[in-house]
Image (tube, rainbow, N blue to C red):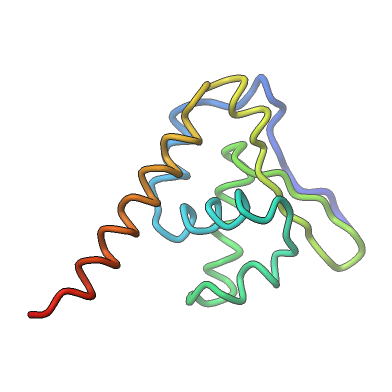
Length: 116
């Protein structure tokens, strides 16, 4: 099986990371990886309501931007956040983005429970 293209740490660029994190589906993937550490692509994608080919696109964008690291094991692909690399290059970025996403989800949940 062929290896997947992944940038070296020194090749990760802020603009590409921010572009990758700007999509709600990719942000959800990142949030889940932050909670679980490492996941099989199939297991992680099973809870996200998008077509498999669209999900593969999102994984590729995250990987090529340097947000995630993919390890190929046989027919499986294990995905994890490149938290150490991102924290070293852009201190506090990932924590800020994930905290903002959590606040937005909490606000949306509260708003959805209010009577109309």
